[in-house]
Amino acid sequence: IARNFSSSSAVQSAIKNVTVIGGGLMGSGIAQVSAQAGQNVILVDLSSDVLAKSQKSIGNNLGRVAKKIYKDNPKEGEKFVSESMARIKTATDPVSASQGADLVVEAIVENMDIKHQLFKKLDAAAPNHTIFASNTSSLSINEIAAAVKRKDKFGGLHFFNPVPVMRLLEVVKGAETSTATYETMMAWGKGVGKTCITCKDTPGFVVNRLLVPYIAEAIRLFERGDASARDIDIAMKLGAGYPMGPLELADYVGLDTNKFILDGWHKKYPQETLFNPIPLLNKLVSEGKLGVKTGEGFYKYE
Ligand code: CAA
Ligand code: NAD
Image: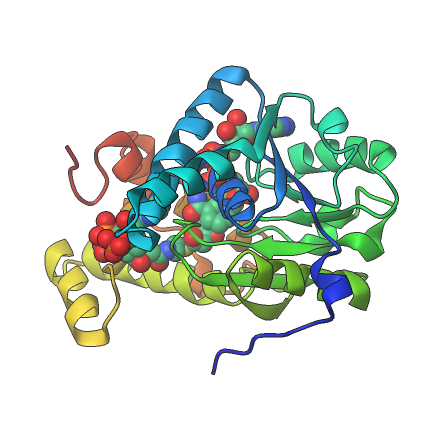
């Protein structure tokens, strides 16, 4: 059952200005859905070169959305794209970009130290009311929040790839996230068009706690030679109704990302055999076969 939490109009309008830090795959998508929903967005990354690429991909993806929504009215579609694009400013200094933010969503590299450095700087400079959220896939929200004083205004907003298409948002309530912050995050998520679920700060929240071991088991099954990659993927698409098979999905998410998540959890929870390292996954990553983004993983891509 989809549970949409509604809230008062005061909460709905609590967030108007969003700063998204990290303009990669996820940050670009988060900036896009925020701008589509009428939010003023500042997208931050390390260089203007990266930001130019982010803007290009956002423009293309907005075009795909416009084609769908305004298929009989291309003029309205163009207006939708240009107005959404105009709501996204870019910057390379996260501190000044957060001065006017009601919400900061962090989508930078999955590294605890780098996330801590960023949030420490932001905490010292952002207005008191600003809510901080991390889009982390696998790290603990409480551990990331250790870097800030405003622990009541810190939570998780975990989106899914591709952000403009996937309808779920996991809203993570950390140990010290206040009810007001949680409710504002739920209302904001709904406002940007997502169905929100509530998660505790447990490894992988809900989706990745199920998806990562599932992908790992599929790789082990293939590694043992129990079935071909193609047959494993066909099995889960036609036998269980998944849009992609597990090995296709592993390639899509990135084999480095899968390995990184498993290694981190294995270190933290060595007794959980589902998180054990997988020799075949390690081999592919060491060969630079990271999936779709490098042109080869379990499959080859043009
Ligand atoms: N931006 C905007 N629109 C996009 C898009 C993007 N990046 N990618 C695809 N679309 C749109 C297409 O335009 C298309 O729209 P229409 O149906 O109106 O034509 C629609 O989405 C379907 O796309 P395609 O026809 O190209 O391809 P598809 O039907 O195979 O769907 C898919 C692609 C949506 C990715 C689908 O295969 C899918 O749902 N796969 C599973 C994805 C998944 O599980 N994601 C979660 C990964 S785990 C994660 O993200 C968490 C983590 O922390 C690692
Ligand atoms: P990505 O590599 O595509 O993008 C990360 C971006 O952050 C890069 O453009 C990089 O230049 C920038 N960056 C790095 N350090 C920075 C800093 N200190 N300040 C500003 N920008 C910085 O990665 P991604 O896939 O978008 O993942 C980002 C976050 O989202 C990670 O925490 C990841 O775990 C999480 N996530 C990823 C997925 C996925 O499927 N890829 C899904 C959900 C969540």
